[in-house]
Image 1 (cartoon, rainbow, N blue to C red):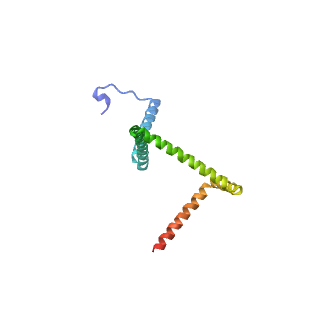
Image 2: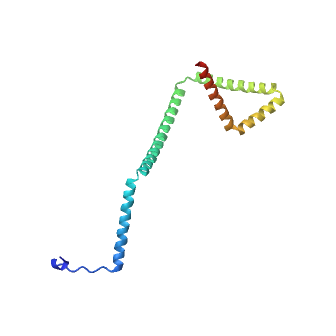
Image 3: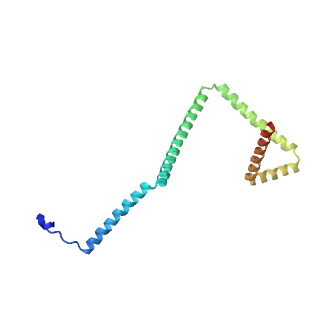
Length: 156
């Protein structure tokens, strides 16, 4: 059965250029379809995408909750300050000032009574400790673990 038997006009034969365009168009469609199917079949990539989305959503929610907590804490601090009688606030400020002054005096007294060579050594030790924080922290953690293990074995 051909087109002429139905009474239609004969379809013109496509040119080679038109055929090439149709083939190229069909290849593009097929390529997009294959990529879509591959994406649906790639469970690992889907899990990564969903994990990233959940992670960003959790970070946004954490930021919102943090802001709310800060706001509530600020409100609570203002409320406490407003409800606290002025004499109590004055006494607290005086006590804080006295503690700072006493601490400064104690520090100055200790510095005055400490011999200069010892102060120099302490300064050198503090500088060395600041320069080597990581090894010192690791050594301290190892010491704590050692003491805990030794203590737990001593109880048995």
